[in-house]
Length: 195
Image (cartoon, rainbow, N blue to C red; front, side):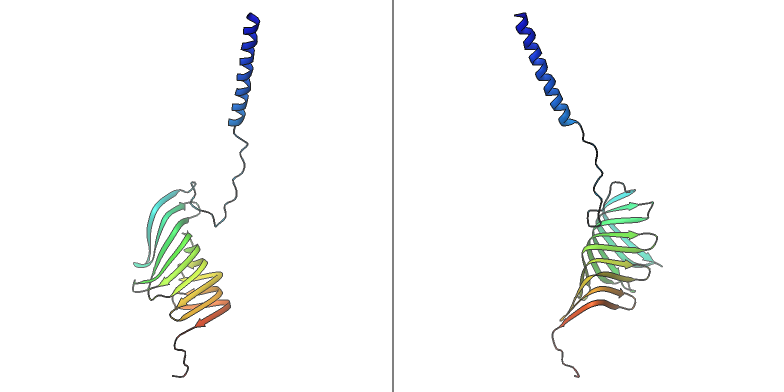
């Protein structure tokens, strides 16, 4: 009987030991791997930011005059770089009389405090008060010069007109748009020349 008890305890001990090895091996953390590199198209709000805000509403002024207003679902500010990254961006640009001039929406954006540069990307849409619309995937805005530009395809729609091209420079001060290449236009409506 003692032999049976001894062998039974040894068997139970072996089963417990094997079970412990299996449990430990399953719960031992693997070697940490390097995180995948973040691309600009991935979500940009990072936990390492100095300040993270939800439901952001910020208005930029110059000499007491509103320049633009930015709203975003969330934004993260990095004090070292002076860069703010935002998600679900909505902006309003004002004219000299501080009237709403343009409305911009984009999936994400970046603003550099030192240079005044703003860059937005992901389904960028700009609409004017009078209904004109511009679509692109990426747009840079120099807030000091009041110039917007892109090297991406652009689709502009106006009453009875549609213009497409690749690359654009828009000077807000002169209200002048230049499309750089591969320009195509579709004009409809009353097109009689020499009325």
